[in-house]
Length: 376
Image (cartoon, rainbow, N blue to C red):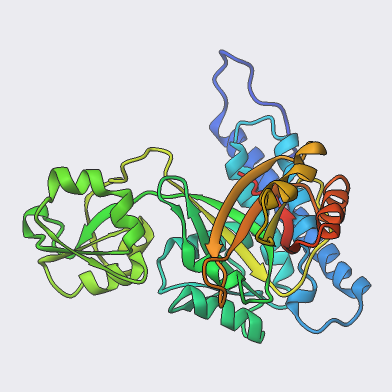
């Protein structure tokens, strides 16, 4: 009778200074892999039970809870003692949760396309690769498709650390009923890409205007006379650049891979901290997660101290304001709406109390959304 194969059990690593046995190390890893797979399968089964406990819902979007995911990922960071970084562990757990949620039905996420944009990267960072990305031709179309229910959520850029606000995104909130459900911060690296891979061939460059601005110093130094052609997205620029050897694009590495372009140089962004913030937009509001941000749209009457009247109740309650920006009101010449980001959730004090006080003064305050602060 053949001897029963012994399953490797987890053990302690070899003592410092001793030579570990390679076969034993591999056996330990195989055993751990087996246990990890079993635990992931068990988690998926329990996630399925969550769906049953909620009853029969209409679609995958009804099962998605961003505040719950944020709480899970924060605990992952709090428990982490290495050797993997917080970023790596958050990415791994995000993919596990994405796969478990997709058992019901993959989420459909609209983003500024085509394939290969930073917006697509932001989708995967926030929702995981089990979500189904829907590339759109414009930011306006992302809003339209989410409003119509063709997409469950959308991911749109709102500001860059070096170049400021993406105005079209803010303008869409002036008329759209959609809510902000989350935020994503994505470190952005720009590369000069072309079909030939030779800088001496480049006569024209395709890129989004923001990319040209982010790389303006490098371009002045290395390609001062090259024609710059703006496009709706960097990926669209990469798609156009693949048709001729004298054309190049500024885009991320993923766009280069999608459109079979070679890297000429990069990263070429002027600022080492180049980061873009994206907003997740949807049709519903969500409960507090414990560490939230609220975006407000404020219309104030034309009177002395009007803006102070909005900000003072926030300051008096110790509510931190991270951003304020004005945009022209639609249909009202020389009147402005203010976009304000503050700490906290609109359903919790002290922010709830401050908003009630502002409303009593007659100013119109619209909560665009309360959502978990970006995790890494």
